[in-house]
Structures are given as C-alpha cells and as structure tokens.
Length: 362
Image (cartoon, rainbow, N blue to C red; front, side):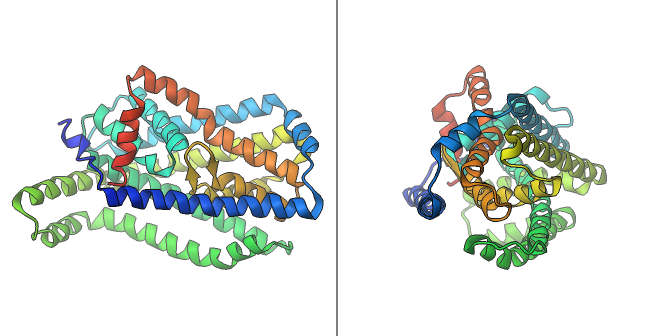
C-alpha cells in the first residue's frame, strides 16, 4: 500500500530543466516589477528609508498578533475541508495528522515555492494509507473551490476599481483590461470541471483508458490504478452534503483571510487606512499575485500589494512596502517555524520533503 501512495518520483533531466526555467522566468518577471516599483518611484521622489523604518516600527503588536491567530486558524479549516474531500475513502481520518500535513505542506510551499504544493497530498496519502493519485484528485477539487472564491473576490475588486475613476498606472490598467476575460474563462472552466467530475467521472475514466490502450500491459495496469485512484479521490463531488460543507469551509477560510488582512492594516493604523471594501479590493489583487511564490522569498504577493496600495489607494510607497512585507510574513512565512517543528516531530527530513516536491514535476 505504501508503494501505491508514492508512485514513482523519478525525474527526467528535461523535466528538471523545465522546472528551473520556470523559476528563472518568474524571478526575472518579479525582479522587473521590483525594479519598476523601487527604482522608478525612487527616481520620482526618493524612497524615505527612515519613514519606512518608523512605519514598520510603529506597528500595533496586538493587532499583528491577532492577524497571526487568524492566519493559523485557516490551516485548521483547510484540514477540516480535506477531511470532507477524503470522506468516501476515509470516513474517520486522523484529524491531527491532517492538520500536521496541512501545516507542513504550506510551510514547504513557503520554503520551496509553488511546486511544493504536492507535499501535502503526498503526506496525507502516506499518513492515511491512500493512493497518491486519490489525494492529487482531492487537491484538484480543493484548488477549484479556492479559485472560484478568488475569482469572485477578484471580480469584485475589478468592478470597484473600474467604477472609482482612479487614475491607474500601466500595470493595473492592463490588469483591468484583461481581468474580465480571465475571470469569465477561468470561472467557466472551473465550473465545467466540477460538473464533469460530478456527472461524468466514470465516462471520463473509460475514455481515458481507451485512449491509453497503446501502452504495454505493465504500463497500462499502472495507468489504470492511477486513473481509478483519481476517480476515487473525486467521489466527494457526487454528494450534496459534501458539496455544501466544502462551500462552507471555503467561505470560512476566505473570511479568516479577510480578517487577517484587516488586522494587519489595523496594526499599521493611520499609515495605511482602508475601508472594508478596500480590504476586499486588496485581497482580490493579492490573491492572484500570490500565485507566483518563489522559494523562501515569496514575491508576487508583496509586489502586487505595493502596486495596489500605491496606485489605487494613494498610500505612500514606504507604508505600502511595509504592508506588503508584513502581509506576506503573516500569510505565508509565519507558519514556517510551526511547520519545521511538526516535520521534525513527524521524523521528516529535508530530503524527503524535496522528494515530494520533485514528484510534482515528474
């Protein structure tokens, strides 16, 4: 059973090269954005480092501590949601192990970048003795729910900015121009995929296996196990009760994220005052910027936060930079010490986490 949950993590050289190229490309894009923000803004009026230090140093630590509490609670809600996802295969999973795998998985994303998303399903598959492909399917379903909520928040953000009459820079003007198209296409694709999983999973399995008949007997049998495990992993989509609980947990997760943002901004006080609608606008843009998550340094979330705060809300660059860094620290980096401690408690090594991360690009 353990062999089935760790299905072949060998990596061809060309896959490794492709993965490195993606990291390099993302680094170049983020570097260009950072240069645009800091170099050109600095040339226009200068970056006031003493003001930046004073702004960050004047944080209200009570609100900052509360933001960390909200951030930590999101991982518990995510574990509850995953329990619903695997309910058809494990009606009574070990909840503490789900929480532990969730925290370790998100810590791996912070340390290793987005490819480490596979660490979480890898650990849960091993902990619950389930095929890895079934947990990969659970991850796909979870991502679809998160993307749909993120699209809704992003769409709200675009509508608020478009109707505000604010004068925007080139980067955000482009985002507004293509944002509507992206939302429409992505939402239609996600909903279509959910409906296909709910009503056509068996047909898709049969079509897939017919298309793979050219494989040798050994590889065909292995592909059949993988596809069967994936179909098992999406069985939760067929239950009305499970669907309602998945929606409820996803909404709860995003409410906690909004509370986290609100607490961080409260910690900055008058340096970065935003209304509740303004917080949702910031969340909407940053949720998509966070898709570019470079190992150890983050990237997209900080840059997007600075762009939105300076160009839409007129926040001084120094305060916007502080907010971007603190938001990233609370939303991503704060869980890292807990994740490392849990990984050590579980007896996990850095090499084993990298093995799971590499399996995602194999």
